[in-house]
Image (cartoon, rainbow, N blue to C red; front, top):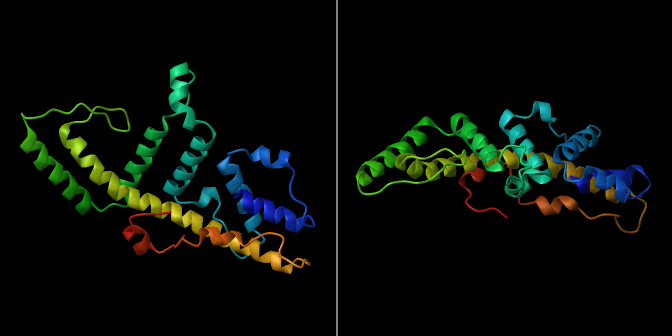
Length: 215
């Protein structure tokens, strides 16, 4: 997103780059960067969906990434010092995953995972005990501990899909801005075709849900 902002600034200011101070003002504020890119996209063919119009889960993922980039990545250190004020990022991620499970993962798949966990838990009854917590810091039963990996695997596929949808719009906007380099009166384009770094982003639902590994 900073690359989009820099390229747009160069195009609008006779190839002058924004000041270091200006760029530092953004810091790791992903929401502000996204909002700036939305404004830039208003003059381009490729439009970014404003945050208020994103699907609720997409907006929540963006908020989670924004919090983590700015503060919550220090959550564990803050907890040791007593300065912890925001939600644990793992709890936040758990909330996102639970929302995805309710909205996107079919009841049939959820029930199959829960049924398998129940059968395994019954087989272990009296032979093992579980001393674990979930991402929400709540104690887990053996059945819950056995079910969570499968439920998370299902939810993670759709989490990637939400992220890919946002990245696709950013890739297309990056492409629009990058191609303006060829309209500049220079022997060589003043900046590279930055969208090439995102060529692996492919907004195809079946492909995304099937794919196992990402760059």
